[in-house]
Image (tube, rainbow, N blue to C red):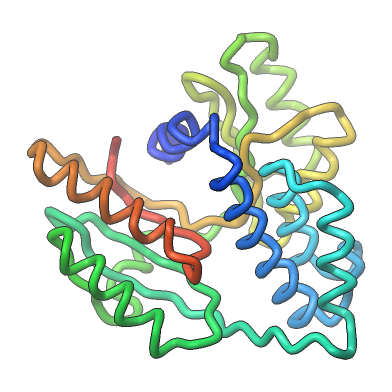
Length: 243
């Protein structure tokens, strides 16, 4: 299993502008609301999905006050935010597998937009299950070590002691894998040990990767990902393009 594709995306977006950061906060807030409503609790100790989303919120530097207000909003009797969770699957250029997770209040709007992006950039939207079989759902925690200050053995032991299921050193850091329901718990344990995260969330991890050798296809794949990620209804985009 390899996280190099994920690390490429992280490096590309490290210096996100305020507008990008604000958009990230908005998307995470939607996930918090859904997690509270579906989990029936605003307490992350009793709601593993909420614990995982809070770890994700902290990784994008969402202030604790924002997290708290969003949870309180979700618990409020007057809250009318009813987001529908929708997953789209399809293919990018040269058969790159793509999974799109969305939270929307209007499926009739989101589906045509997603379909249009795929068609415009050399891909096509497929049926449910057409590519998800080639991905594994895992908790993924990324720890930056670009400066080389962290020792691999120490990070590995701390990760495993915290309940991680797997650990991989990468060129610029470490990728820690967990069971989906354990992601928030492991992230919290590592945070107590003094670690900060580049990313911490449940993801669809590809079992294999596809290389694109044609410049035009690479550009189209980049544009497809950018258009999907910029869509307000899209929460996450996963793919098996080796970058």
